[in-house]
Length: 382
Image (cartoon, rainbow, N blue to C red; front, side):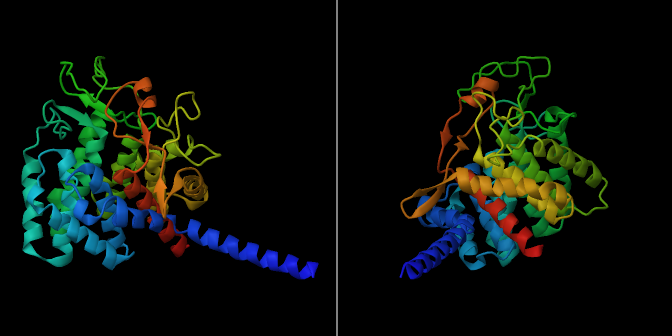
């Protein structure tokens, strides 16, 4: 009898373990379900960068044939819901434009193409810095690393729609214009922002005087800011023809960043930190959105043959398991994210350390789902 009970408990334990593993291995789908059912249904979509990052995740799911019917319906309803808000007056507004460009490509419907070109017309009139970089702000001329992703992903989607290389070349131009002012040649990491003039502006979001130095830029490598760059670089390298003269230059930037980031990942929890180059320092904290972004860029790089799997796959595995263990939690029937740095402007080390850590941000879900999908695709092809 005791043996029978032992065997029964063993079987139950094994079944429970299998069920747990199955649930754990679908955490990206669970996050996606939470967003579209509860947190941000398509009819609640707002034409802004924050929401646009989840929109990008939905589009990537469509492009990768993951839950295509469901995610296409989400993208279409979100764009229909914001049809009257379409604009590209600043980089954060441009970001949602890739939804219109994607629908124009996928459906051939003229209304989406018209709206996508409306965004592009606005984009062309955004103020620029002296080297041609798109200003992140409307009222002052500043280059932020955030801008690179917001505008480049739209321009890449316009290239997919039209086949016109002017869109691809403009994305490359913006990457290089921003790199000229923000990229650190030694590590490959990027500073958060650069001010085009010598006038200190009063900005309630930024730390006053952040650019009061000879370089007119801040002095820290912010995690999520660098995440935008890594994702942009791996995406454009996948898209652009290898014979383009800028390909090797952008590849070098990407590889240098990947090498640096691989060496500052926390080996125990698989995360990167709010300020990645100070792992474990007092005041610093693990940050789930930049962790997902770096891991996405590395995973995509392995899939595309840019990175050696034997070196970088352990980095990916640590990030995947670390996010699952440390940055997900239950909220009623749903799985949600935590350890997300709230919206962040520019400052010094203390400024970044004192930013709020929150749950439930569309950009956090977007980048986590994109990494999850890349991970599953990598596993499927190996």
